[in-house]
Amino acid sequence: MTRLAVFLATAAYSGYFPIAPGTVGSVVGLAVYAGLRQMAPATGLAFSLLEVLVIAAVFFVGIWAATVSERHFGGTDPGPIVLDEVLGMLVTLAFIPVGLAAAIAGFFLFRIFDIVKPFPARRFEALHGGLGVMADDAMAAVYANLSLRLLMFVLPGWVA
Picture 1 (cartoon, rainbow, N blue to C red):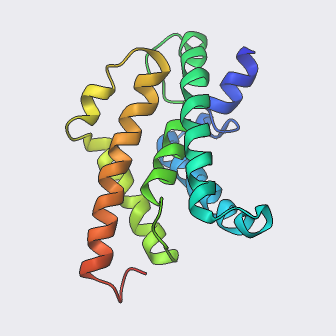
Picture 2: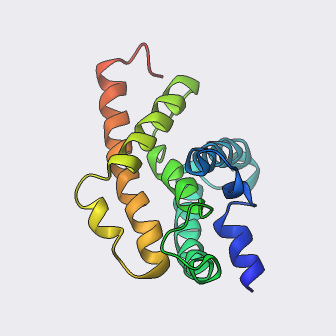
Picture 3: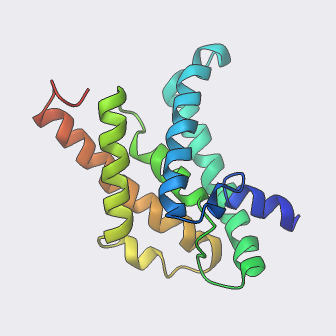
């Protein structure tokens, strides 16, 4: 079970990338989002329902996988765990009809909020185990989602 947890927590081992693994995890999140957009019509589900189901699954599976992986790596929120960044990108882009420009803007907004961790995201980081790993990025992503919405409202022709 540890191998499965590490595989999931590292987003199929992408978290082992030697430079900026969190950024790589965010790119994986963009790819997952793009895949969901393509897959939604085939599932027969509305895209927003599919988003909710996937976000919830990634969050709860991520709590388990990150908890097990923290023990495996021997530290709190170690660098190779990037499933939280995948979740962050999914939350950042949730319920917003984005094109390429908005997806890229969302990517940068999430990376900024994930690094800065405004209140209460930094506090969530202190939660025990995988819950802390996942919750701080989820909160940073909520800020990124709201900021992306504002950006799209202010610059509708540029960010679409």
